[in-house]
Length: 250
Image (cartoon, rainbow, N blue to C red; front, side, top):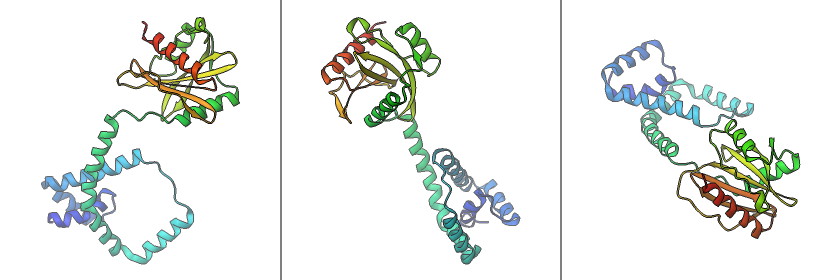
């Protein structure tokens, strides 16, 4: 079997769809051909990566029926020809796909969107589930976080400055688990989302407004912060500055 003949069969071989005689012939060729064997490994790696990374959605019954009828009408020769045309390109695509995954996994995840933080804050307010651990003592809230997330977020006591701690909870935020420290200012609630985010420290950014709520974002000590509240912008900025300074202290 030549490399060209083996290449035409790689897709079917990777999917386990070759009849025994052609499968054995292809395997014999691959045992002595490093290039074709590498192409097969790339195809299998692509299949495994797609299965692991891409969400699976079952096609509607009507669509599955149309595809099945089309395949029956086309016959196996046409399907084999289709595989033969795609196999060489898929081998190269597998390498590119693997490189893309490496870049994505080695890069820090993007900062979660502002509106998601606002939505989670509103949901917690409406459901009356602002805190999973209710305490004004940061020595209680901080250890609770250490049992529920894989990092230890700063939870400073700001009661003396007029921002008492209410407790904390954990949210699925931006595809990760974030610690949410809950503070108060009079009758206003402040949610502080906190997650690991390496990079240079930044000061609290000017407040963005989302659906009547103010949102401040900054980075401090390898952590990302996002404060959400209906508190006025001036006081929320004061709070963020106090929290940032307190987080720097040992």
